[in-house]
Amino acid sequence: MSDALSLHDRYLQLIDQIVQMTLKGNIRSKEQVYQMLVERVSAGTGELFERCLQGEVDRVQAWVDTATDEFKQAKATRSRRALQTIQGEWERWQQQNQATEAIALVARKITAADSAQRLAEFLQAIDPNRSQCLNTSQLKQLATLLQQQGDTLDDSDGQQALHHLAAGIHQGLASWERLQGHLVSWIYDQGQGQIGFTGSPGGQNNPWTVWAQQLTSPLPIQLFRALSLNEPISEFAAALPALEVSAWVELVLILQYLQQGLVAWFDRLVYDAKVGAKLSISTFLAFSIIWSQLARGFAQATALNSRHRSQFSDGASQLTLQILRLFSQRPYFPLYGGVYASFPGSQLRSIVNYLDEPLKRVEGTQEKARILTLIGSSERAQGQLERAKELHEIAREIAAEAGDRACEIANFNHLSRTCVAQKNYAEAINYSQRALILSRQTGDRLGEANALVNLGYSEVFQAQRMEQSEPESYELAVNYLEQGLNLAEQLGDRQSQALALNSLGIAQVVLEQPQAAIEYLTNGLKSAQVAGDLYLQGLNLAYLAEAYYRLQNANRAILTGCLGMYFLDTIASRDWRQPAGLLTILQGQLGESFDTTLTQLRPELIAAIGVDGYDHLPTLIERYRNPE
Image 1 (cartoon, rainbow, N blue to C red):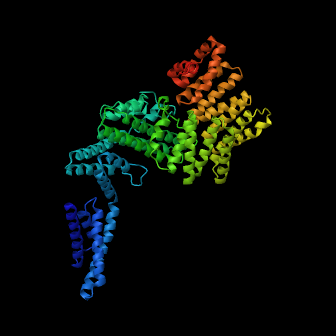
Image 2 (cartoon, helix red, strand yellow; image 1 turned 45 degrees about the vertical axis):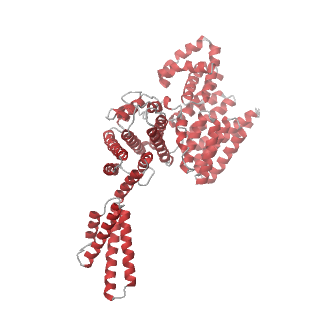
Image 3 (cartoon, helix red, strand yellow; image 1 turned 90 degrees about the vertical axis):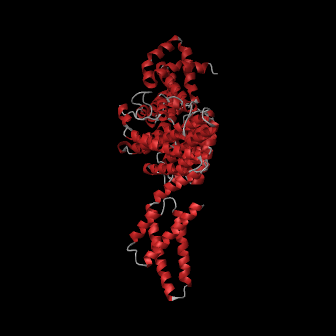
């Protein structure tokens, strides 16, 4: 308190000094006043100076209003003008020192926070969703300020905490400087235009391997090596024997700058904006998944003390949400796509669980609606139909309240698709009709394309359930599907094209038109591959197997069935059982010829899913035959 009073008195003296110099004619310009403020007002104390200045302005104004003596009236008026000059230069000082004040404010908040909340305050300061997110030069200033403030503390624990935080910031910025020149070098080493996070595990063209080679700190090196080998990151974090705050903060800055740098680079791929958007989507998802896995792992890291376990886990969840919120505001946020793009299979199995946990803390915002839409569609792909329906209903309500019509329409469409999977065709038709009406009212052509596809898709299955065998019963449904495909092609949206072609192909399988089905499904597979949607790839392959089987082409049925089974199992979709069931039937019908055919297909299968994938196929078939 004594320090605050002393500073208060010093500021009153400074203001009085400037006024007296003005009255004596010793102030030659406004610049002189400004320089005095720069030299004498300390960073982080602007509020106190402003209160002192306003107090003097009010006092002198009262003097002007009450002075009766002509000499005193003139002096009061001149004093008021001097104070007005100080006010004008103070406004200039504030504008010039806004960043300094912001840094000082962050430092004060971190210092004053409870020990359990200091990391959360730091993460809020670097949140890219904030208008005043600290940049690298400002972070350097913050680290210096935290070091200085730590030196003044009598509390040894508080002093150590601030010093560790400052050290982590310095280390993180230094590590980022080493990485900057290698941000995208690995892309050119992958060859054949294959850009993504799926370089050969541990190989030199794997980004994590490239980045690990540039670093000197143990934690990021170990994490990047685990990522390069597709090891479970939650298990890596849970097994950490020790972890200092400085190392954790360094990792935060490294991952944040890598993610932001990659997105900025991919967004500038003007020669192919769609490729750039796809890669940016993969980047947002990759880093949000990493932090989600780390959050779970830190919570289970029994070797860490309970305070650090909680801080590191909560902080990782906070970072996950920051990334997802930023992602949800991008124009390419995939309202109709899943999360299965450019990731190794081992990282895909529990994505929904990892992403869902931090969302429990988010208020009912537009961002939450979009994130829930993404997760809901992925849960449907994994067979969690009731959970998917619940998420889409919540997302639809939030989107409607927020006025996000595109997101609201998308959730009607997802609800329609989910109801088809539940064999509730009447409700599916209802949802798709609502999506179609709302999309046409608002001019959402992408939503309209998906609504037409979903309406036709639902109508096909409804007609089949009612055992309508006449072709006329399906004409309207197929017409809706074709309208949706045409509109998706006009829009150039690969995801919607893939869905439309897949739906038409399935409809032709249902209508006992296997040759027509093969044409649609083959084109649907190509579109799904371009869109990076593994679920639709797997589904197209599964129904291609059905179509080839009906044409008695066992060779192609086995090939497409194996690929469909593998891809769907990779993303933990329960639909893997459909091609597995067909392969079991073929195995029973062909006997030893089945294994012979599988061996003959080995080169094609390995080219698509690798040696490990090929070796895993018999295990999947056996798992289908003998479920646990």
